Length: 383
Image (cartoon, rainbow, N blue to C red; front, side, top):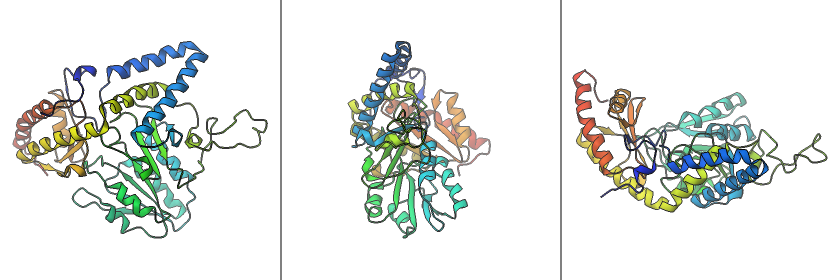
């Protein structure tokens, strides 16, 4: 019952730890490490190595397109999600009186770039969550004819709640309002449809099992044609054209957003890990983490804890959050037991992925009970 979908021995360090930290970082798969070493060997092959880099990059886009039911030419690679979101914010033609919509479950990278738009007279509308959730209707209620964009995560880093973005997009497509969907906390663990939004963005180092250094940027070109605010030699069709000192022509597809070389070590790693996830099957991974999450939530509630994440499987993914004033202290206490979770900001978060199993959850719950008792004895309280 609830066995891991992949053997822990395939990851570096899991023989000594209980890793429930995938919403922040994932452990290194040995195949990912070998892929990065393969990149380093390619560095010594001169032009042959460059050809290999191009092949890996193209294959990575094809695999990600398969994962999101999209097309490779609609995917760009940038440095990180913050760069993607800032690029979109800078590239849109904002006018005074326009507005955009955020909500209180959004990670700072999905908030900060938009705040600068206040200088242009753009209104920032904030939707308050209700018991840790924001629904499509909550967002639609505050949209109007001057709403240019909705920014939301598919799965909240804060509460673990999953938004039904597809129903939201069905309504937004009837207007000129664009949808920017951050799938950093969902891609690789639950299904994502890239054309059920106008933009999708995802970091490489969480549920995709890869390393730092890349962001996946998916663009729905059937609905939009955005001219990037910045340009680089990879953005243009002919960087050595006869008129290159006077003008340039942007790439027709998502490559127009790629300024220079991507992080090839990351792409070599991601080329391996995305294929691994596809081989196991995103639907299988989703079923696994939801079943394991239900078991975890029951155990947390039996300990008297306030679970912030929705109980309903369809409303969550791999993150399970618990409200607790001593969240950081709890995470530090579990770290001494070599159990990795995230803690802080009045909560702690447990993240379940394909390598986790029932034994991981049982070990967490067994170590958590005396730790909570000790904190309460010191005067801390759940709240």
